Length: 396
Figure 1 (cartoon, rainbow, N blue to C red):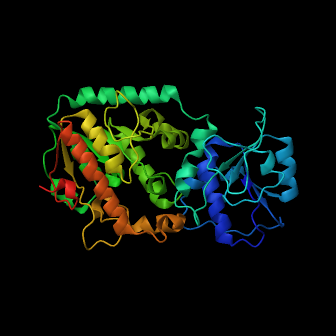
Figure 2 (cartoon, rainbow, N blue to C red):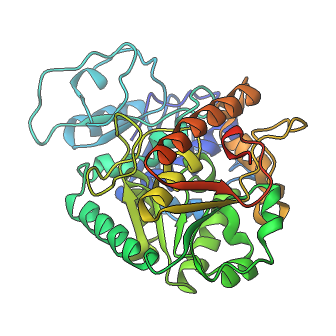
Figure 3 (tube, helix red, strand yellow):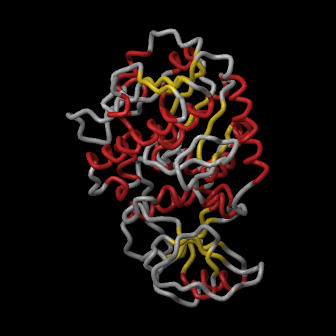
């Protein structure tokens, strides 16, 4: 159930966005998706945003609108997970008796109540697209926490898969990483048959290239782009399903996102693996600690440590970085990006993009990459870029 109740005069597109987000992120683990309104009228006027994908509405039949009195009565009589859309919520009789679900971000005005019995009601901060830059992250983690948190059997299976990948990589001359920058075009017609190939994100858009490359691992880890309720994400997940059905590759992401994805797209559950975040310092010995060190790009957080773990020589392709003329995060290869759907992401998660200093963000990624490349070099790894790059650490 959503809380606080939605104001009667809420803009109809705003209510439509709540419906779409709730269906997509909460649908896999909920029997009903209840939305209380401050004034329940006979005709509820809302419009689903055009950027919401049809896939996001697969649990639309679970939506139920209630008035406030109905909602309070149900919360007293039944156990619920309350999905909170704002951190700044006034404490009332609903949240004051609800226990925060493990993993929920703290709410501004609601203090933690005394411990409750196993049948108590819990609340979870879901994120607000208009006010929280991490809204998609919190929403995508809901399944993980509702399902009980860390799944040791799944993590063990993920660790085992990565060990198997290391044995496969040992027969190859190097580990080749592939990004979506414009310089990926320099690698398209080269022979990559003797390398263990790892790709990321929307490279799978180019099916001819992925068939030529025959990658062993695909990585994606941004909830706003890859696991959300808009059409960009739907296109990615559609390509992901097709890619996994036509290859023997494994898909890696955060373990929390993996929990959601395996419930949301069950036909690929056996090919999805997760690695937790939480390393205190950068490292790539996954035998010693099966976690990644936080970072601001898929290259820093997943690709470089995976490549450094799997082999001695790591070759990067298509990690162009931010050119001086770029105005966004950085440019992408048009063959490997859903450029026509980028506006959908911006509209679905406005706070993520609002007032962001893209140059400062790119500099942070560049600085982090320098630290991580140097750590790999000090450990005896060979790291170099085979294509044009603006990253300082990848300069010849």
